[in-house]
Length: 96
Length: 99
Image (tube, rainbow over all chains, first blue to last red; front, side):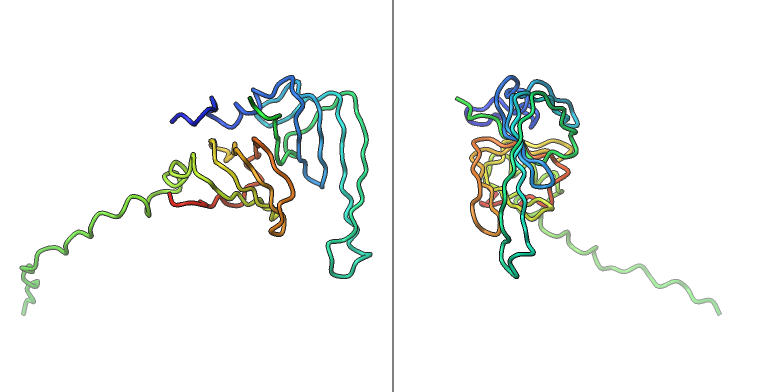
């Protein structure tokens, strides 16, 4: 089964093709990362560098029934090991 | 007084049901094979939906999607050209077009 324009046979191929590229990672706990992907394994443990972490803080107390107030905190890390079980989604840069 | 067993019935065995339509029956694996390359909705346990073209998936239900839209409460919150979704987060995969 050959998909149009993509040489992807299994989902991990998407990650393999993103090595040394800047990727977007969505983590549990309303956290997001962008950084250069250096390594990964079958657990989706990741090694990333030049990482910016974005933490979404939803304050539900201040609004009775609404979405809550969204507050964003950011921080940068030079080198990061991400434990795979926290990963929800990884998005590589657009393929050409 | 012996009660002899009832004579064998002359009725023929019930007719076999017609073969099911392949598109609407089959195992979960058959369904997943059928939706590869189709548009799907992937719902995560968190309630977030991802709509996109299903490139492929594996035994862990890790998923590769193309042309992905992230929907939260019915609102598009993100778009990704490609997306890898780690299988443990998946609640269901729904076909968004006829299989």
